[in-house]
Image (cartoon, rainbow, N blue to C red):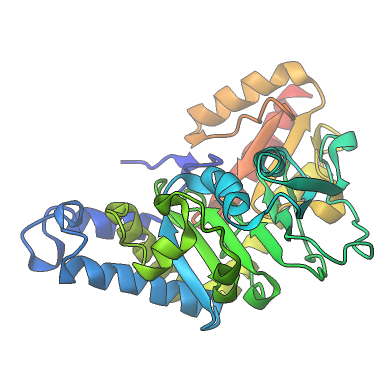
Amino acid sequence: MERTTNFNAGPAALPLDVLQKAQKEFVNFNDTGMSVMELSHRSTEYDAVHQKAKSLLKELMDIPDDYDILFLQGGASLQFSMLPMNFLTPEQTAHFIVTGAWSEKALAEAKLFGNTSVTATSADSNHNHIPEADLSGIKDGAYLHITSNNTIFGTQWKEFPNSTIPLVADMSSDILSRKIDVKTFDVIYGGAQKNLGPSGVTVVIMKKSWLENENANVPKMLKYSTHTKADSLYNTPPTFAIYMLSLVLEWLAENGGVEAAERRNQEKADVLYGTIDASGGFYAGHAAKDSRSHMNVTFTLRDSSLTKKFVEEAKAAKMTGLGGHRSVGGCRASIYNAVSLADCEKLAQFMRKFQQENE
């Protein structure tokens, strides 16, 4: 069977090696006579999966010992409300750098629990760049929230802000795509369905000292301490998604780790942006060059009437997920870790051919 090249923004491509290993173990995991989906989350067999996922994530991201690793549910969207619910009091202010739809949603949720401030925003240019933020006036505050990569608009932070207050990052769409210093952040969170695995599990990496300020008047299931004390096993976790996460992390480690992934992602992005820039305006990137994402390449066609034809012909050529979000229009190629350089070269070749046939 010929595989379709998957450029979907999420749920996104998974490594073929991972899918094949999961297929092989699907009915009989580690000679248990059961699928991993059937294992009790209290069993020793599942615990090995759980601890392997935590250990690999800690190793790959170089997570210090004073951070907790949580596997939660509800996606990054639940974190938008769970964070201020636990750590934003009515007399405090949460600061936001707004760079797209997801940071806008995080801001809206925080407003329900306390004061908020927009430190910088790129909204006036339809979020085509990462704005400069003057943080000199921020001496106190609950936290500063950023979205490290913006799937819809195709922008990405290249250097993170030097914040004097706790820094929180939604890294759903570029976690493990490049080397970062975890110690820069007090909280990192992300849904798995882009670089980490299938949808259904959310990774939260939180400095342990943060829990000292946790709001006691929060329902038990929505308190981070509930899950840290129970090692993310307070209730039944998404066991199969965590198993798949462990396989993806294992695949990443076997393929050179985060450093090698970062090099591959640079090469992949260069192929597509190079094609856009060399098109003489037939293709135009949405993001400013100094803010271009290495995960989501957004572009429009000179003649917008050709967009539907582009997407349909790409699909006929076994490439899917290239339609742009309505906020930007045009096209979007999501090139997460599991998307190969050969996949991007295939798309670039198609783009050049399509231009020749439609200029």
